[in-house]
Length: 304
Image 1 (cartoon, helix red, strand yellow):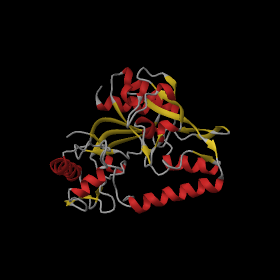
Image 2 (cartoon, helix red, strand yellow):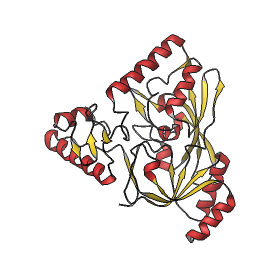
Image 3 (cartoon, helix red, strand yellow):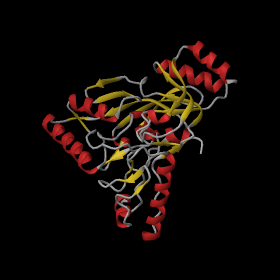
Image 4 (cartoon, helix red, strand yellow):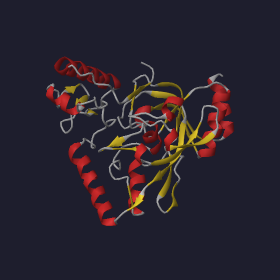
């Protein structure tokens, strides 16, 4: 479908805001990335389902974007359509005394704070994970020994054939940084979390502790995509990078964090090229030094 005709059809559907040639640096936590041809922000879940049904019926692929917290978008940007769900899937409520439903567009810290306010325990360790619930489910995000799979009851998804479906935890195929959602190309609409009643003072103390740990040990004040590399079995990526003498290394606008070597940060108006070159340099130096292959955790998107 010609771009002009596509835009007209999308506008006629009236499903939300449409942006042309939108800089992706405005939609990622790394603060880098060239333009997306078309970026659409649906109004709500029904609009998202209707939009995806329209696109798929016309064989038009779309990239689904949450908060952009685990992405590195290329300097040339993304051809085609980006659908940003961060501002549309925002339901957040108690299902019962110990269960919470969260839309995929709710940030993980906001969900954890909601659980804290309800006197529910179980979210403290993962409370500081950047990004949305949808992304956390998609990649089974984790921190401090706990992963999404440990607190998920069921997940609400939109399948490739545009069916809204509930998937129980046991059927989600959760594994390290992966899930059935990721392997099947589903879109997370929301999830139910099974937590436990706790002692408020203990919950508050744990939340404060994990918040302080992140603030003191991670460069949350700099643009980044969180941990740049997956944890290699038997090792810690940050320790390997530091042992290779790379802590604080600057490569044009990108830098290995001085606070935590496992984070590559956008230090000075960095570009995709700056960051990816530094990532590759780290991988080479660590392998030469230790023989360990560091696998990227951050996902690269866009035209190279």
